[in-house]
Amino acid sequence: MNDFFNAAVWEQAWKDESDLNINRMKKNGIDPSRSFDHKAKTFNEQSFSEEGRKRTKRIMNWLEGQGVQFENASVLDIGAASGVFSVPFAERGAHVTAIETSPPQVELLEVNISKFAEDQVKIVPEPFEEIDVVAKGWNQAFDLVFVSMCPVIHNWESVEKVLQCARKFCYISLPVSPAEHSLVNEIWPLITGQPYHTKHMEMGYLLHLLYLKGYAYESLITREVKTTEVSREAALQEAMTWLGHHRLPVDERNRSIVADYLEQAYPSGKVVIQEGGRFGKVLIRLQDHNMYTREL
Image (cartoon, rainbow, N blue to C red; front, side, top):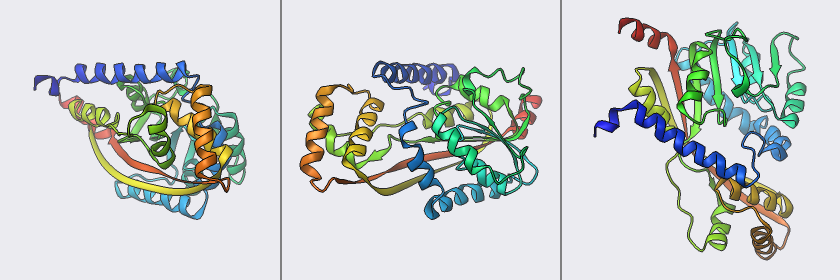
């Protein structure tokens, strides 16, 4: 029970698990920061569709309900993708620094922010992990630091670097459990001989460490699901990417198994996929934490 309240134990456990996952992905030839490059256009279309905008608005309304103000605020959007949040942040009057390194995402982001004044949204195409926060002048420089479903967050050290940039608020979202994906459920038994089972994810480490380290925060866990239709070729590519994320071999044997299954199960050439899962959101109040640490 003592380890339950030992932050060092939780930090090390998160680091060990993260390092293991990252090393296995790299062994399978997957760069976590670039693994969805091939879906950039589709992701952009979904993000700015009517349903996508509703989802974004729900999150922004939740933030505003917690006291976040966007008018004239400085926002650091880490892992901005094509601007799914950078654009609405700017629409509500914020000055946004958008970090994104994926070339296809940056290209789409440039198009999506072209309607704003030149200095309202600034793109930084550098990996956040390689940025010197102090040298960049980012130490407590932003009213809001926003990190949504981004591989930048992978251990407590990465969280501390993100928090270092925030003056008032920091928003982080992570999966609570592995993403639900109907195609993965279908092909998993073919590859492993076992039914697919989910497990808890690193959101638990984040929330518990914030608690142990005296941060004030609000958290929310939701379940969201969407349905898409893709070609058999796109489904094959997506399935192989997911196998890599789940630390299974991305080799010709498994590619052949998945391709044969898709041909038999979806003779029309169109594959209907349901994907989603449970997602955690946390808004950390830096001003309250600074007051807490001064009192200590």
